[in-house]
Amino acid sequence: MKLIDRYNRISLLVTIAIIIVTGFVYYLTISYILTNRVDRDLLVEENEIFAYVKLNKALPQVFKSDGLKIRFVPSATDDIARSFGNAMFYNEEENEQEAGRMLTSSVKVGGKTYRIEIIESKVETEYLIRFIFFITLGIILVLLTLLLIINRILVRRLWKPFYRILEGIKLFNLADKNGINPVTSDIDEFRDLNVEVTAMSGRVMNDYQSLKGFVENAAHELMTPLAVINSKLDTLMQVGEMTDKQGEIISEVYHTVGRLKKLNRSMLLLSRIENKLMAERETIDLAEFIDDKLNEFQELLAERGIGISKDLKPCPVTINRDLLTVMLNNLLGNAILHNTANGQIEIRLNQNELVISNTGANTALNEQKVLQRFYKSPESEGSGLGLTLVKEICDSYGYLFGYSFEAGLHLFEIKFQ
Image (cartoon, helix red, strand yellow):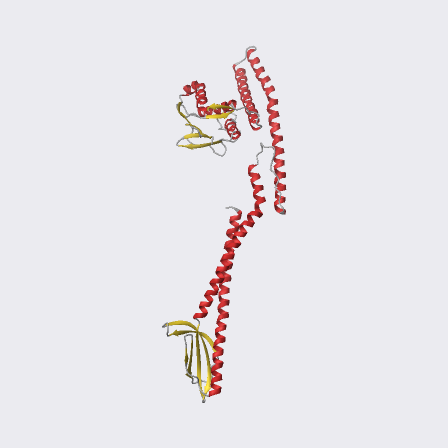
């Protein structure tokens, strides 16, 4: 979930909670105010009764209207305190009970005490309370909606420098020489973040260039000593007689030097690919190229009894011929080397993808590590750079290279589009 969405969700939930609590308090407050207003109306009616009794020495007639009723009930006690309370008001026109408010008091007429009951309907008051509440609620909801929209727009604008910095980090590539472009902002935190990210990317690029230069130099410097060692071994094997043990030791050294030369060549090729030094391209029909490669591997395939199943559609690609050779040599070589005796290799090619699958171990390889440099099985005598070379070549041309294990087959897939 994006930060802005999380912020808006939390903000919305907090706002809704505040509105609910505030709305409840607001409703109680409005209800209290309007109830006090009804109580004041009841007091006015009571004062009018007292004035009438004082003037006429008699009780007024029992009064009934749509919203008000006054009753006089003889009382045996003189101690009746004035009190307010909720009561039910019977509306004769509607023939229904309604919520009401009642004032209870007393008055003396002709030496007798009468309890005064003044009841006023609260229907109109409740209607008014609801009306005020819903109008207020509607205004709050409109304001809340506008606030959320404005807040979303403002937050997006405020966080725009951060997203530009994040986009720069996503696009950062050690092979590029430019690094992360600086982002201008008048917000101190984003400005500090940009400075630190730019400085960090610069340090990483410097370290990477130093390490890459060291590897390149080391690989170049190793070429001559390896060639000398290889030449000396050839001479040593041709000079004089040697025991079987000596021959075995020299053979092991010769084999090890050969692996070192192969590793050295792979490292130099990786360096050239990363530095984009193999820019020559030509349009090649990949289907025909694969057929030619299979012919080259025919003897090895026959020796191990491996069958080939292929479905090759015409697929022209614009690529460096030497790099395409390296890529197919590694893919087909791996499919043969790690296959089982009398196994199977399936090759599928169309305009969108090349898939090479082979039988082999019954368990999947580690998808996270299989394309990493120097990753190989313990029993393998390879350099561990074959699939890394394939991935680097694919990356340089914008292809997607991946591995999967399905139905007992190891699949290596290159997507062109």
